[in-house]
Image (cartoon, rainbow, N blue to C red; front, side, top):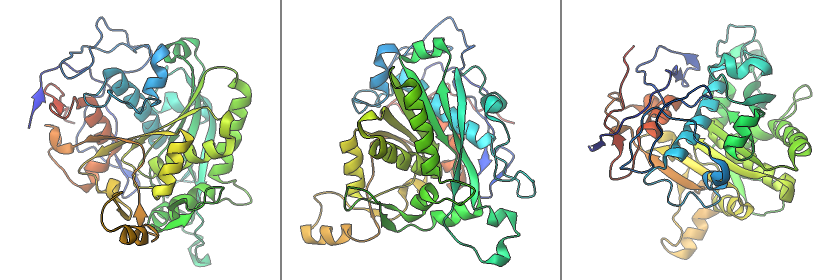
Length: 406
């Protein structure tokens, strides 16, 4: 195992969510991530690349390079070694996802179960993200299409077919807009929390995605959560379209980007939302980038090809030890095997395709993750820790990344 002797700035501890039981559990480990809030002012900045060193991080001005960091060049030359500015942007969007977890009421006995704990005006501050320069403009809910037996309707942990899944936030602070080089809209999605969401995850066969592109297929359960609605609650798709349409009317005349980010189930919904926004708004859609943490597979080869044709950029952050990223179904390598066999396999409801660019990390590279198991390998905190420590494929982790014990 190789480590690089580099100084690394640290950030406040984040709590660990047990997404298997949808409850907050005592942390197995704690670590500090790079500070990225507006109030950080340090005397030194970092160099990019495996040989660079870093002290306390300034909030780096992205400026004219924002399209490069948004993936318009497919992140060529930025992933290995990991560009330090891109690292900070990935961590920043990961913290928006963490805020979605911290804002969700996981307690089935609570009268506010499966809702957001905070109003829009205070969501980011209350979730440990003060001074971001962003303002939450919309709460988002996802509805399961699964119909339960009537006798289960009195069990709140099971019958909550519509639950708060994330939010939309818009950069408002003029200094943050100047730093970013454009006005940025963030959509952040949490991962699986309710029983019905777990059941939707198990609906792993591919189903045809309605639209003008024949043969495009996505995972049945993810599509159900994105498109299902009720009389009292519109679908997640309707809410996303309505809010993006409103923001385009308000800010469409200025440089604008849309960054959709999520973890686990949230990563899959982020990919679906990106696809849908590009299909629905077509040429009026802004630059759309997906930052995906520990996401499962979403669709088939034609889905991936359609995403590429749209110009949608997807950066998948993957932990090699995380089994969720290897599900569902299986992947057929293009050009591999006998052609007619490959065609038959691709026509099944289990042949998925990976999308976008991949930043592959490994829990085994960190000297601080002594417990490598299914649960810890999938935690969002593990992903942020690995991004913070990763240098390059030849120098996988910073030697001075510290483990902070409870």
